[in-house]
Length: 310
Length: 318
Image 1 (tube, helix red, strand yellow):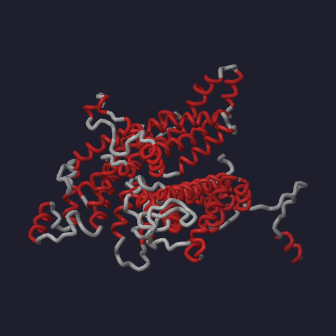
Image 2 (image 1 turned 180 degrees about the horizontal axis):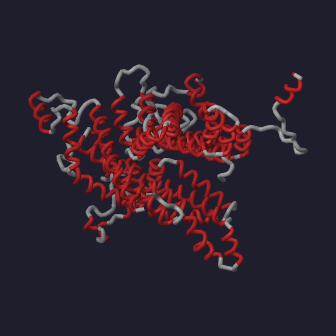
Image 3 (image 1 turned 90 degrees about the horizontal axis):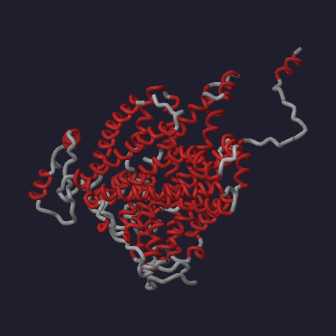
């Protein structure tokens, strides 16, 4: 008697037909599609290599070759075997400084997106599940922040936070906050929209009909389906933040010198462009390469995570 | 539709109020004020200056007075030049509007032509070249494009000038063609239009491809219509809707996109004015430029939303 009850309680296994296909989840499927996308792979490899070189440089002398802020008499040199990218007006090695700039840019790009993800997810979920009144308040606030002139926000918030001795508030953290605290609106709208549309979908209804708890439905069924577009938006957010830092530093309102952010380097190089073009060309190339790689990767991720939009 | 429009227009008021409030308190939270100088001034003079601009009063009183003036349409005066903020903004916005308009025209024309050619040549060599160019153009910052333009066309070839703007200075000169200096106009516009053009090209291509695969295009072909007619009459018109969705935000973005370019080319537009105001802690002008920008963005978004309904009759606003 007992044994027969046990067998009826066993989950029902569906018979596979002759075309056996290994079980693949959403993510491994997406990964396979991403690997097949050549441009996205080029972007990923460039980012891994450039990031690896830049972050290893301070620990490996044969990569960095010179201290980024070391001043020497050899100023305004063009590229040579001694100074691969040449030197600036103070005789500092542009290769070492560009590597520092790449480090700063990646830190700011990724750090900003951590802030954006935290705020965007919180506000988005709050709006989707907090009831009609909360939804209205949160989304109207999002609308307002969306029309805020972002450059003015960066400049003001940076000016408020910088030059204060708050613990952990390094110049880079200030830039991350200045950029991140205004850039979350897109993610918030995206998460809310996704959540609301997913809530009406059949598989959520099915899960509810099977008696899944509200929490389980959100965490197991809805969040993974929201993650795709969010990951894509984050990947596109990184180059946007790198661009914001570079623009701000370019007008002298970014990471304060002597930190060699890419924007600072381009700005310094642009001032002496009549004498030595190379000072500006290499850091500008680095910004372009980073942003291009992230964009290719983002395009590839979008195609991989949502095969319907080609 | 009319009710929707009215509601959207009225919604701009609280948006501007909240943005004015945030800007006001952020601006006052920045250490130092408009009259902080490296050199110490006599206390009596300092106090007189503070009183003159109302800076000696408590912050909430300054805020109440600013909002009160704002409601009456008075943006106050610039703390730096002592000119009315409204006059400065209108003057600078005239230059920025020329740049934005030219950029938009160049971006739409170049972007759509590239996108259509790319789509018609789907998966050919030209298509791949177009897609690569569009992606590159969409991910290289405009000031880097500007810098390379300066290196090649100004420093090396000497074709174009890199200082100032060549458009008319006052609305009265719009039809006075001797007031234009094209040598100064090319580089800022090209640099600014690279990104939107690339973006429009990508969207146009994708949307053209989608429409070209529709059944009614096959029907049109089966009827024996000429290819040019199919493309221009049947495809392009329907492919325009997604393009319109990006033109709107781009138009709004141009207001801020030109901040850096204006600074770079020393163009006296609203973007450069906003940066200068923030650097000088020119309270009056910071508020003015923030509100101006927010107004432009709000109106642009509204116009775009209304245009959708005009282009696509399936869209109904309630």
